Amino acid sequence: MKRAMFLLGLSSMLVTFPAAAQQGTRIAHQSIEGRPFSPAIQVGKTYWLSGKLGATRQTREMKEGRTAAETHNIMRSFQELLGELGMDLSNVVSATVYLTDIADFSEMNAAYTQYFPREAPARVTVAVAGLVGGAKLEISFIAVED
Image 1: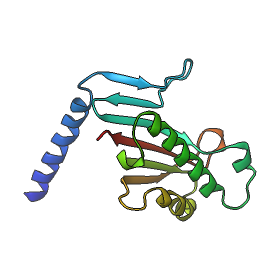
Image 2: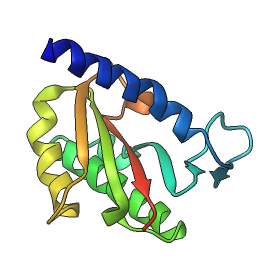
Image 3: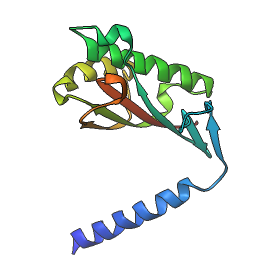
Image 4: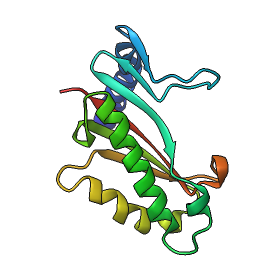
């Protein structure tokens, strides 16, 4: 019975949250013509930040430390975007990390945690078959204005 009540409560949250997320004006930030996505979409005080890749010509040539280097590239890029939006990494409440090789989890995690020394956001990490441009990982965030 408790399990059924829990599942009923969970399903109602999943149904109502997307509706609540759509209320208010949608604002696309830094939209680039010709690209089928916006780096950030704002609804109210919540920002959905599109995934970022950290692969560069230099990182693709690396034999050691590539995952950490890509993680640092991604995090610096998010710091810049959040700064332009008047926020910083402390505004991030949720992260999704996509890894092409789950064996790279420890290296990614060591670099990632440097950016959240106190309170890290909720996070999901999944292994995927591949990413654009031969990237080793991609990270997306949800942030909330204070």
